[in-house]
Length: 361
Ligand SMILES: Nc1ncnc2c1ncn2[C@@H]1O[C@H](COP(=O)(O)OP(=O)(O)OP(=O)(O)O)[C@@H](O)[C@H]1O
Ligand SMILES: [Mg+2]
Image (cartoon, rainbow, N blue to C red; front, side, top):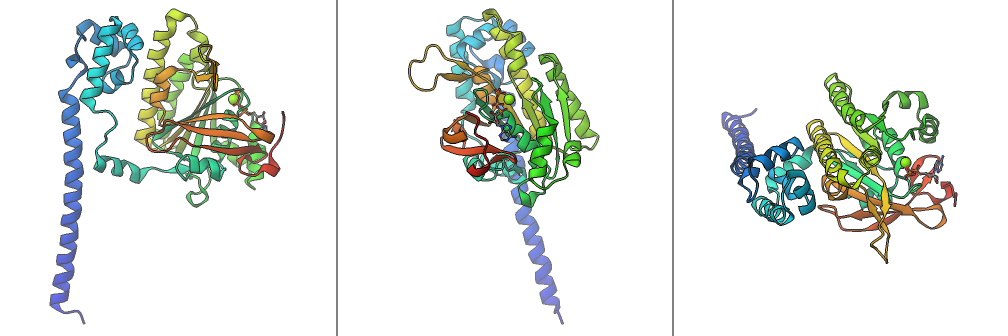
C-alpha cells in the first residue's frame, strides 16, 4: 500500500518537475521577448545615411529589417535605395554591427532544432554531407551546378522520399514541385517510385506539380501553397526547379540587376517564412554562369549573387565526377564543414550505388 507520505512525495515531485519546466519556458519566453525588443529598438532608419526616401525604397523592395540590409553588398544597397556606394557601405557595416551577425540565442536555437524534420536524399554520403539525415525542414537547401549535374534528379528523388514514413528517412508528407523549365517527368517519377517498391500512381498523386510560366507566376504559386497547407494538405517539401531561371531571363540587362535582386530577395524571404511557419523543407535549384574574371579553379558562379547565397541555409555545389558519379560540395553552411562527397544517379534516383548508375558521358 502506498503511504500518505509517498503520495505526498509523488505529488511534490510532480510539482517540482512542473516548476522546472515552467522556468525553462519562462527563460525561452524571456529570450524571445528580449530579441523582439532589440529588433524593435534598432530599425533601418537608425542606420547612418538612410533617410525617409531611402527607407521607402527599401520597403518597396521588401526589405524591412536590419538583416535585409546586412546581407546586401554596397552595390546592391546603393542601387536599391538610391545611395552612393560609400554611404551604402557604411550603412551595411552599421547594420551588421547592430545585429552582431552570426550569434544566435542558444535557447532559441535549441527550441527551433527540436521541431526540425529531415528528408533523406537516398545517398548516405549526401545525407552525411548535409549533417547526417538529409535535407532539413525550416531550411532552404540550394543545389547549384552545370547542366546534367543532378540538380533536378535530386529534386525528383526528394519529392518521392518525403512521402516515406519517418523511420525510413521520409517526412510522411506530400510534395509541391514548382517546375519553371518543363523538366518534371512523370515517367521518371514512376521509375524511381517503382525502384523503391512503391505504387507509382499513388506516389504521383502526392506530388502537386505546377508549371511556372514566368517569375510573377512563380511568385504567385507560393500563395497557393500557403492556401493548400491551410486546407489541410500535409505538405512537407517544396521543390523549386529552377529558382532563378525566370528571373535571370526576364531581368537580363545590366541596369535590371538591382530590380531582379529585389524581387528575388522578397521571394526568398516569403519562401523562408512558409518553411518556418509550417515546418517544411525547401529544395531549390540554381544555374551557374561562367565567371570570366576567374583564370584558375572552378570557373562557375551561382546565379542570384549573395542574395540567394544568404537566403539558402545549405548550399550544395554539384558537378559530374569520374565514371558517371556526381560530386557534391557543401558551400558555406552555418554549422557544417566545407566537405565533398560523391553519389550516383540511378533508376532509383539519387543513390550511393555505383553499379546502378547510368554513365552517359
Ligand atoms: N533514369 C535515369 N537513370 C539514371 N540516371 C539518369 C536517369 N535519368 C537521368 N539520369 C541522369 O541525370 C542526368 C541529368 O541530371 P539533371 O536533369 O538532374 O541535371 P540538372 O542538374 O538538373 O541539369 P539542368 O541544369 O540542365 O537542369 C542525366 O545526364 C543522367 O546522367
Ligand atoms: Mg534540371
